[in-house]
Length: 200
Image (tube, rainbow, N blue to C red; front, side, top):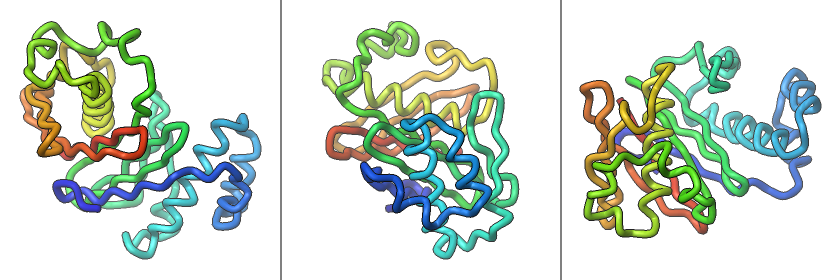
C-alpha cells in the first residue's frame, strides 16, 4: 500500500508469537527473550515484518540494525530515507520512504481518547467541522504521533507545536502544521483501528 510515496505494510499480530521467532537472528531472539510477554509479542512482530520486507525494500542485514532514541523510537542508521514502526494490541505496521522522513501510527478505536484529549487537542482544532465525528480524536492522536516520529524532534508540545488544520474522513487525508511546515498525512481504516502515515 502506497500512501503519498510512503510504502506502508500492515499485519495482524498472531496470538502465538513462536512462529515469528523463526525469521529472527540469534541476537534478536536473545533480545526478545528478555522482554515482558506483551512487549515481546509486539517487538517480535515488527522485527519479523521487517525481515519479510528486506527483499522488496532492498535492505541489507546492516540496514536492519537499530539504535534507539531517548524517546524509545527505533532509528535505522544504515538506510537512505527512513523506516517508521508502530504497533497496537492487534496490529503492527512499518512505513518506508526512500527520500526524506516518514512516520506512522496505529491506534485501536476503542481506546479512551476523551481521557487524554486535553493533552493533544487544541481549542482551535475542536472547531474544525470534522471534530464532531467520533473518530476525530483517534485520527488527531495518530496524525500527531506520526508527525512527531517523522520530524524526530524532542520537547514537542502536541497541542502547541503540532496543529491539525484539516481532517478529511471521506478522502482519507489529514493536514498538520508543524514548525512552519505543512505535512500531509494519509488515513487508513482497519478493523477496529486507524492508521495514519505522514511524510516530510
